[in-house]
Each structure stands twice: as structure tokens, then as C-alpha cells.
Length: 228
Image (cartoon, rainbow, N blue to C red; front, top):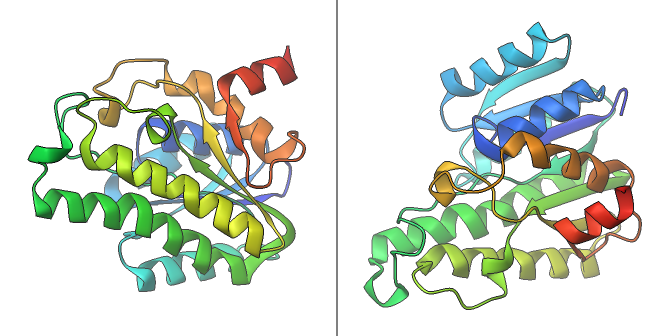
């Protein structure tokens, strides 16, 4: 991925941080975004200490003007943008313990604004700068497609994000795909599941090697089958 210009939102921890580090290790120039500058700067320091190229940009995906500035900044680093990983997300409740009928309006609204509208904003603001053969990857999970008790607004937001993937795939030239890495140990999952570093290579494969990704859900089985 030498010279590839990549943007990773929600890059301060979990999947986002691991994906940013792996992309940089593969030679990509990575623009890392998160709400808290000092945390994402720590991730960038890890990347540069390991010999990679990265920069930190504080941006909140709930704010389209922040995201517009993020994409303009990333595009100036190279000849546009080649890859976007729209990873920023929140889960305000404990997984499995947040039934939808008990969800507060404020928590529901912020989850949708971050996990669904935030993906829409990220894709929309990236497109003017995205290379013709560029790719946009949106992390998702089975909770978007399967009825799982207690997943509340988070499940709704992920189902909406997958619908956005299909819609953008139908409407734009570039490839837009969902990546389902299975259950990964992050703050959003209650720290249960695979180590984020173990699934980061899946995103490199989806960005670089996977074929016919447009509008697809690339899951763990597909990745393992393709790379065994």
C-alpha cells in the first residue's frame, strides 16, 4: 500500500487504532481522526515511532464541517484520498443490556447521529476527494442483520449503516463496502472478543486485495477463505 492515502475515523482506540497502525505498516499515509486530539496523537506517535507516516486531526463525525475539513486536510497530503475507513461509532449502553423499549431519546439520537449520520457525512465529504478507484469501508456486525436482545440503538444504527453502504454503492463510482470482523474486544463490545490487532489485516485485505466488494458485506469467513 506504499503511497496510499488513507483516512481512518474513530482512530484513537479499538479497531480504528489497530487498522490505522496496520495500514501505516503496509506503507499507507494515514490521517487519523478522533474527537480527542491528545488520544489520537498518541496513536500517531506509535505509528511514526514504528517508521510509518501518519497525522492526527481532531474531528467529530457528528459535525459535517469538521469532517469537511478532515477530508480537505487528508487530500492535501497526497493526490486526493484512496481509502476511507468510516469507523467512528458509539454505544451508550452495555451490550445485551440496553433493550430498545428502554432507550432514552437522547441516547438514541446521539447513537444515530454518530453511527449512521456520521457514516453518511464521512462518505459524502470524502467523495469529492476520493480517487476513481478508491474504496470506502464501513465496519459493521451481525447485530445489523440479526435480532439480538438488548442491543438497542446500536443495532439500529448498524443496520442503517449497512443500508447506506448499499445506497452509496448503487449511486457512486467508487467502491463502498461493509466489513464485518465478527466480535472484537473494544469498549463498544464490553471488551469481549478478538483482539483488534488480529482483525486489522482483514481491513488491509478489504482495501487492497478483495475483489467485487461494491455494496457487499465482507465477513470473517469470506476473508479467511480468500487468504488461507
